[in-house]
Image (cartoon, rainbow, N blue to C red; front, side, top):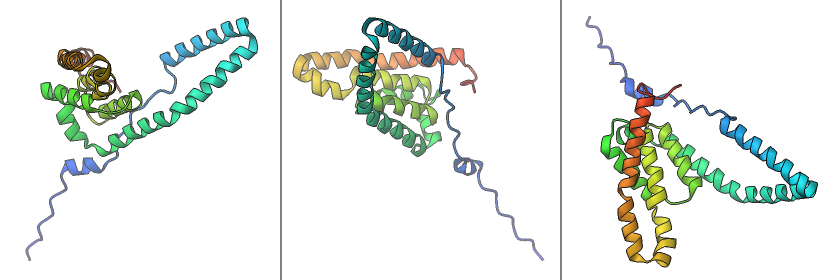
Length: 200
């Protein structure tokens, strides 16, 4: 009696797609947090010596009010970055924006940064999400620099009404190569520091 043919095992890529992606481990307290905490402590002492406890509490309550105002935007930006990291396919992002994407990855990052709306609460979580799903430092740097220099939101709302069309267009044209150059330099330096990839 003939044996039934065995089914081929599922491709490794399909199995890998079903596995959960490891999240990036972030230290809650780093050297920058320690430096900021020390500076805050020094400033508190200086204000307390000059204005007493009333001056310290007045600044504290004012900053808490400011924090309450920006907290929803920070939360929305972080949620956007987290959802993007889950939605975008890792392999496609790696091919389009990874270290082997060449000039195409830098151009895509530059274009994405130029059209990305919102402020830093949106841009930096999105950049972090792209790094998580396979983009390299060069493409992420190109995106952030492009948003900073070319971002259409500021051009439409501020530059065109105040500086005029000629200034805005020339400023954008002159700025166009800079995100690509910054991304290429960032990619070059990063690969020299970590030739085998990012440290664990």
